[in-house]
Length: 491
Ligand code: GLN
Image (cartoon, rainbow, N blue to C red; front, side):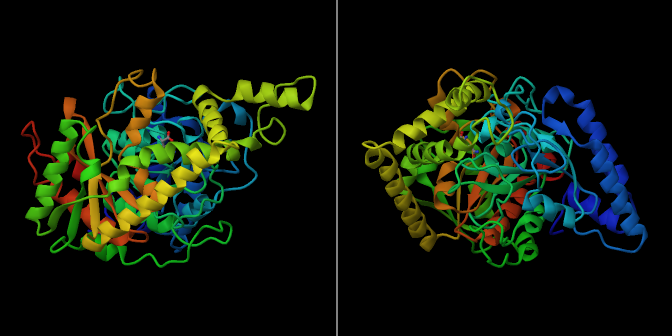
């Protein structure tokens, strides 16, 4: 049962010669085509995907093993570099730019037999929580087209939740994998900082960014994670730490596991329907033999403030490279400085400009100590408070998102309202710890609620152990409407 899910099943069938990679990829391409109104994809690489699928089928016919993801279609967030297709970050400023190389994760996917089918829509430069900040128009939530899929990885989440691809890769700087996963009813995981190479990931905030998997089951997410994880000499922040026994972790029970509910993330500001699903998860884990208790991570309440100083500071530096010379768009003007200003004015959207201004401000002489340095101190407190919590608990539990999927336009008028969407997720990024969102039934309007499992650095195995248990336990937990809750657990 370990690595189980739609992608694992495709790969098993392709490796055994029971189905062709070509049929799996053609099916995915047809589903993408039929779901155009979702706005999930910026580009579909149909020809390259079919050619690749044929090569995999030829390999199987020749007696070779294409790898653990043989023939499994994967969607890539459009901030992951691909030499065969443009990488836009859903921004006009990268218009017409195709990277000269593939990201390390893309090379690892191909080495494992996976087939990239396209690039997914996102908030511009991964800044946002609803995918409404895309320069190409928003992505819709497949479960309710009047609502956002979350963000910034809304396209990847919609692709998996809508059944367009069994797998997707995305990036998570402050919650961009986990929050859309929660809002779309799928599994989304942010690995430990340093676990997955960011070579070829367009940088947003380099001390926070990680690439991670989205899938319909915990087993598929763990499988995709195991393929992309590992040290890479091309990313100096990647770490040569062994992965642990993921298969064993997925199969293990939670008897005796110590699970802490983070009090600062499970009270004020979180909707009642979300809190009641967290309670249901805690009760289910207790019933399965886990020890569940409350734990305080005091600095977590300042996480959002620290994040919205550190992330924009790093973004203002990282985005300085879009100068009208090196990449994409150039708006001609009389001199270099005017050209630079005209290009950036036309090329960046409002949210990106807001972050650049905020970041430049907090780094400027006179304000650096008051804001940026202070935020770094808070970050140290977050790390220290988590360390204390993990002396008593193996994993921590919290909601992923304070609410279920919201309607278009509901949070765009006031940026601070949008930023509150990240309240439960940013702490793991500040600490560099792994965290995963697992669907745990539904809340308001029958929309999915995600429960977040957090673990200490390089604790992905124990994190997956708790996540897999939650997925299994969901089947036994009655939903508020009385229906069986097996749909989310067994697609
Ligand atoms: N929503 C957060 C932000 O707007 C996180 C984004 C992300 O993780 N890329 O910054």
